[in-house]
Length: 584
Image 1: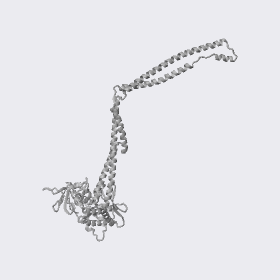
Image 2: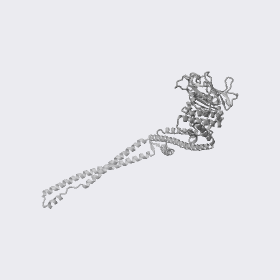
Image 3: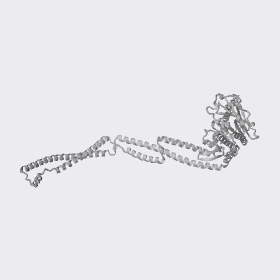
Image 4: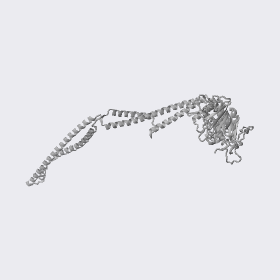
């Protein structure tokens, strides 16, 4: 419980609390305009101070870093697990707290004592001690267990943390995993199992990071399956071995280039001679055909023709026929002589071609035989370069295969682990049916008090593949009012369960922002429920309200809300706020 909150500043208005319901009011000054608010009164600052004294880390630009509070020391009188104490923490030395136990003992808190300074502890030790006393956290600290700061947030939500948005989270920055572990612990479920789900999420993140890295190594390509990569690696290995064998067995011939050039030139010459041989052969055939077909004119056919017609040719004409025949025979003899000469020349050329072709072919064969299995240095260099490229490709493929196998194996193992975790969580919820029942009933008590039978609603604690899910719903439009009352019901139930299972901090603090948009009837009912909660936990329900809104509330007959208002009333004047002045 919190007995009082104070500060070393002389203008600070100390706030004292009693057991039960405590209503902190902020008035609007009569001279304030209609549009002015109580934002400068210090209600939210009071919540921040409680957090500060309970070990929170001040954010950059927070209240505790303003120049006006540079030398301020805040203090609180508290009862923690039946132990009365005073805790102090200064803004200048905010990494430690000074703690005075009323009975003079240290109660397990590792205090530094000397003759000069008051007994102090580090903020870390202070939080660990509070965790043991308020929530029965394990000692020594289990690194998987929720911390005190991860649990106390549900008892003191803050608007600046967006703490009134989701019932299962006291801050927007709180991860799903941290919320699951904290709520599993508070509700009496297997929080270690919830922690394993958190580990799985981290492994999934690592797997995603590996996948991104593998894709980055692929460049613009896509990630291939392990089966495809195995095939590509096998082919690359075979090609690499072939190239390696070629390089290992390569013999350099010192005249390789010259001989290779000679062989290539011989091939070109042989091809040219072959084409010429075809031409010469065709010419020889044509000449031989011409020699066979050449014949002189025969005058006897003409004489026979005239005789048949009854015409007798004269001796002179017949003589002329004989002279013509002799002339043609002379021409034919000359032509045959010419053709014979051409035939001889062509046959001689064909023989020369055949001889040259044979010579060149033999030389080329000789060269190729001498170069077989050998090569030039440039060829060896080229082969070595090809081998290096193929080896690089093989190494890249093997790396991709390794990535693919790791991802596939990791994914398979992760899915198997997730399925086993889900089954264990389902079994755990069944085994802890009483804890689930108590939580559901506690929420329903608050819901029925707020809405009677007008709106149905309930708390669900469900096993999901991503871990335990804590979900509270109240029927109706998803207005701010209903959402706020879901938070109230959740906190109400959580405070009761925490007290039963762990002892708890024995206080629940709600800022007026929780009730923004809530119907006045529900606000009044919630405050009355807060008093019953305070009685149940043998502690306090501290609610901070604006006085004009408080005045509109209609409480149950016989419920004296005014009697529960703390003596110190804040207002929004220059000196009426919590600090007694306005910050510049």
